[in-house]
Image (cartoon, rainbow, N blue to C red):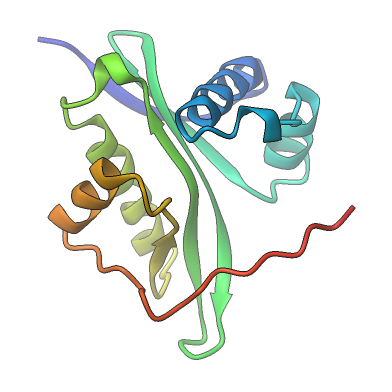
Length: 151
């Protein structure tokens, strides 16, 4: 039987995190948008602690990651957990690892007394959408995401 663990990222993991980010960017057809470096990840995740990252392993082999941060709901008066990215390598999909990562974050949100957990998904990513619906997540179709790039 294989051993599955999820743990927080360390300084030594920044290369692995960057690798996962690049693999995700290839999947999302956005590899040209990736400009992050190991040093930037280290600064944001571990020095400034503006975001958090967990890694998933099967028998010591890296299988996926999740990157998240905390936001605030003015209506609820509570923090929320925002899942920025969740990725499981294709050869490890279908084993429940994505679900375990997602529910690991859900447990963190409960422990931190968050009011909700949210994330975005590309509208063409039907496997992810179907997965999210299967666990009871609801699409917030009445909302539209806007962005201003700060350069």
